[in-house]
Length: 210
Image 1 (cartoon, helix red, strand yellow):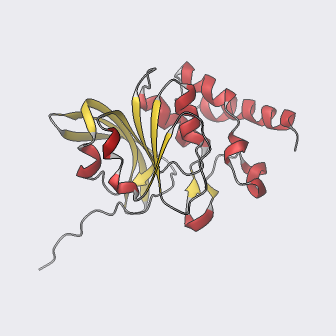
Image 2 (tube, one colour):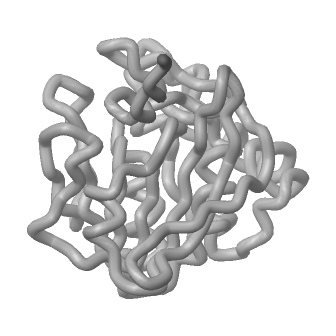
């Protein structure tokens, strides 16, 4: 497939997937129209780069659909200079978009997941739920997938009034959610049910049953 083909597919993604689905931040639109998503997809799956469904990766992981990425970026309200803690960086696509929008990105990903090759970001290899305390405090927590709960370990790495965007996994349903940190506590609002990849290591504690 040629570069021109990918460019046409990128334009179609912006017009048919993003603009029609509440991705209305023009800076998000501009970044997603510019950054070549195919460069962050395994070579054997590049023909799927702009399809609006998850793309399988190694180790049972997957790359979120473009619409999910666009909605997360829109809700994050990224401003130039924001320090962003990106959890579940996967192939580096979301990191590349955040950098294009002027963010300072620390990306956390597990060992063994596809290598991230994004200039200008700090990559931390390790458990996703541990975050990257050395770079705290962060202005934005960007969890690129759905979790059962956002652990206190991550909330503690955020600045007061930090924005948080994530998916919440609840009994087989994933919901796009956003919130802010107030007095050290995180409140999340559910925005819309949407198909998102579920990240490992974020199970909610099981309730004790008598």
